[in-house]
Image (tube, rainbow, N blue to C red; front, side):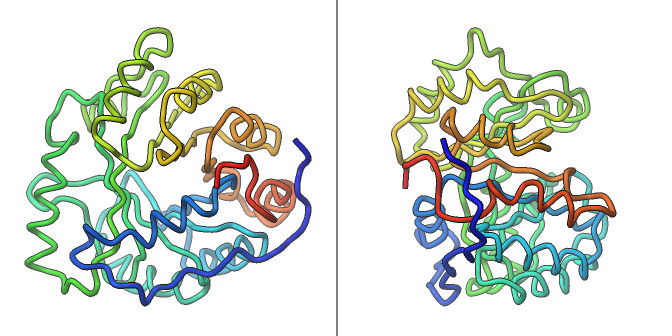
Length: 280
């Protein structure tokens, strides 16, 4: 597949679309389905200051990135950090800014006004029902008490699967890594039955096997989108995952050094231009 080198800004996202209660509305999911085939940067707000995040967001938008993610495993003093951070990033670019943070028992997923969307992961391999589904209901109750509905981000229900040795995630969330040799068919069946629109495949220390991406793509209907991240640092790896059937490839650490501008230039061919892969 020929790499794309243009730097065409991504289509804008209509933030005025109604989001009644965060459920029912589907503007963000529709936008993602219409703009598949891209690398997507994951910014950690607890590592990256807001000025740098805004600069990165603008640079990525100029190169065609159709959405951005703000995410972190550790998020102390969430409201203090994120209340001004989220609006600053959304004001910088006309593409969706999506949050991805872990829930906490008692409150659910942390949120502040201004985000366009929120990934609600169902950790299908977790031993704790809280991280599979209970956190979703708890969050709706908390948001209903603390956040006006017009400020709710659109909820994107997501099947989340981890790969490789990851004791930290296992200890925190009760997850068990997927066995690529035996688990994929049953997990694909479960995802289809649940109707989850996004499937998030992640590996902290290793890589999501390309064969797993290919196998899930073959077993899932087109409306299910595959998002793959974890140790993605080269254009070749991005191309490999997109060619295997990923709809989006997430990268984070590749842009966390002082030389991130040069690193972004090295990745631009897979961030820029029209969607790749022909699944829009």
